[in-house]
Length: 133
Image 1 (cartoon, rainbow, N blue to C red):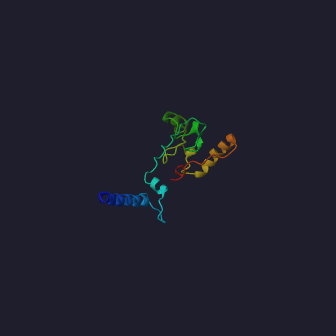
Image 2: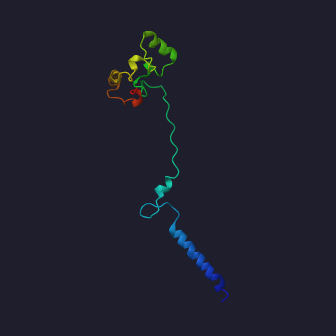
Image 3: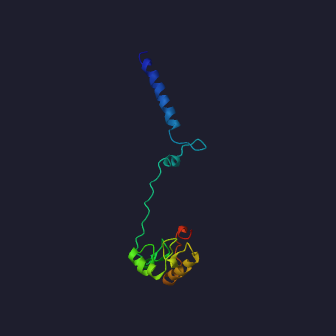
């Protein structure tokens, strides 16, 4: 009889522990089962830093022109001598008029043809922001 005093609470707590272990503590999806993928979604993955334009290649993919003549990437003194002093400047969009796809998106075809002539295939089109006013 002495063992009956402590065995009943022990059995009770063991049973209670089994109930909680069976119920789980994970997120449930529509059918009531635990969903590890939903638990993983609680902590978002850090975003990769945006890769900066390195200016080392022949082509400026960011602006859709050869790197050596990109009026948006060249130093300001080069831009002045190559474009502004020759009257090739779009004041509205602050870039060479001949490279202003915002004013005339068809100008891009000339530069695209240059890329095709060099590499034999089309390049990826610059971001749409280069064509919208």
